[in-house]
Image (cartoon, rainbow, N blue to C red):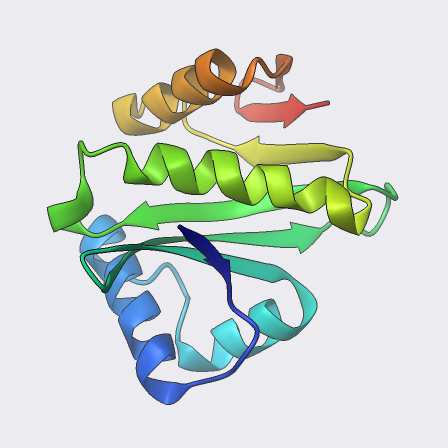
Length: 142
């Protein structure tokens, strides 16, 4: 089940940063302090598996286009990989966004990264989204 994070809890923040580090070797600039404004002013969703947080995804609003959000990152714990959890997290979090007036989601991926390309393929297949390649590495749903 996907959950929208709305409360700031120190242990939760640490867990989310640890998941990011396990995926990217570094937290890509993300630390507990950076998560606070993302939770308050963006959207951070998590998915649990066996009572543990298995993954997270983060969205921010596009300041120039009303009704558009940007998927900043999606990460899954190592133990949660290949179980469909990240796909469920992506699908369920995107399905939440229209309730908040979001009609379009954009993300940037490296087309050379097989995991990111797989994410795009799964999103297109499972959600029947119209994904458009833009500038070689920007993908927009709408």
